[in-house]
Amino acid sequence: MVRTGSLFSQLLYHFPRTEFAALVKKHGAEKHAKGFTCWAQFVAMLFCQLARADSLREICNGLAACLGKLVHLGVRKAPNKSTLSYANQHRPAALFEDLFWTAMKRFRSNGKLGARKKKFRFKNKLMSLDSTTISLCLALFPWAKFRRAKGGVKVHVLLDHDDYMPSWVLITEASKHDMTPARSLSLNPGSIVAEDRGYNDYTTYGRWTAQGVFFVTRFKSNAVYKVEKELSVPSNRNILVDQIIRLTGNKAEEKCPFPLRRVVVWDSRKNREIELLTNHLEFGSTTIAAIYKDRWEIELFFKALKQNLKVKTFVGTTENALRIQIWTALIAILLLKWMHHLSRAGWSLSNLASLLRMNLFTHRDLEEWLHEPLGTPPLEPAAVQLSLSGPGFGQPGGSLVRRNG
Image (tube, rainbow, N blue to C red; front, side, top):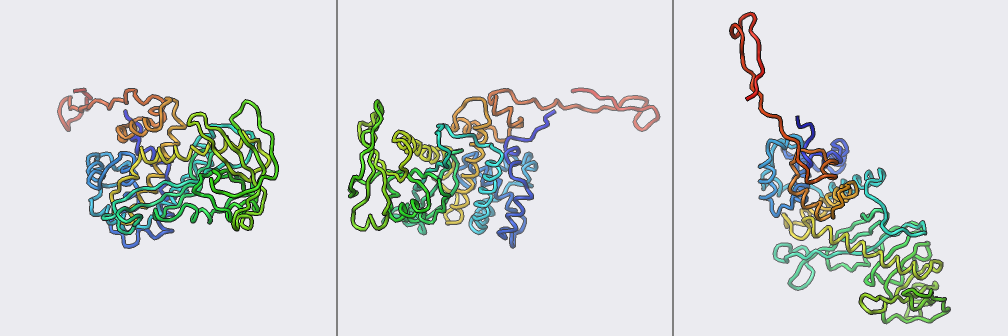
């Protein structure tokens, strides 16, 4: 007998209904609702991500094709296209944002997201700051004007390198400069932030240094500075220069009046020099270079998000619908990251996402499937017919005899 729900229903177990109902009440998301619940909307949008449905029609038809299996998802019937579209347009995207952070907190507290790949000797919190641009058709998304004939939004992310998942996410119009929302970040003293050259802002660097927050970034090629001290360079390494400097450019010294460090690294793969700037004066130069190299993990996060989930095409054209789809994509990548950490099959995240897409309504134990995804699913029991035998139906001595066939 099949004693497990589908893989999709087992993934939904990680979102307790009482917790979800509390978030719905907090945001008043079901005010004036007439039958179509926020839970049904969440199930439909998560199905959109995990099944990579391209349209409202595919979402609704995909769920309708599994109508006999929807009850175990907490959904009575598949939604209509117009109903789902209206819900995505009017129900607050903040509900799904809060759901993501609530689930993230629970997964992190239970240690379900894995550990840092590269081990550093320091105990500081290491994070990466970057953004990715999602291009949009300006005719369909006129509110997201980016360039003269192009629209777009930006997803700004602060990635925690303890588990390579976000600690901060902000969705803005693509025209907003990367550093503008980053200025509002509140970081703990001792944290290390690795970032690209687009985040160069001497005022922010001065504030972070005064607060005890460290940064590692690319040095601007036109920066003006003076060298205060030459530091020794380790032999047989890719470090070319290690210096203590002070900024001397126009108003730069006023914005960041602290000694900084310039480290030049040789990139043998591309045959070029990489100039790094940091306010950490104690770490070795090779550690500074390794910290900046580990920043590549945030690029891999964006790559996984865009390649495996639906964040480049959208099933709604309003800003609220787009935000709901991005937040459900982040919820889906959280589930994929957890399953990837749990699995012993040794497959890539993209292979996991594609095989899950084809097995969402397969009835197998989730952990068994993760360890042996190509195994045979349990067989459904053969139909058994009950036949009557004995002196006669309804007469004393009559009995039911179980016969197969």
